[in-house]
Length: 84
Image (tube, rainbow, N blue to C red; front, side):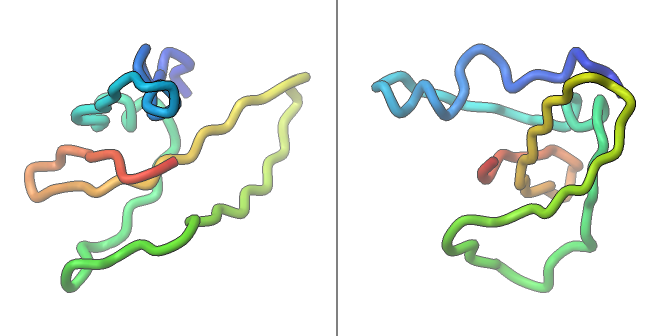
């Protein structure tokens, strides 16, 4: 793992207080962590509600931070933020 992965300095939480945000291509960030990628979906898909991730972790570290992003990967391999 590469612990320099980051959401950047303007995250979606900035949008809640009137600031803008934009993640851009997250592919470089993805290469620093663990990712799961499905085959391309057969067509447009609407995500409704709050996506949920069930994560089980075992570690010898005293503390841990985990962030999960749902992204769309385009045909060029660029990762686009959907939600986290």
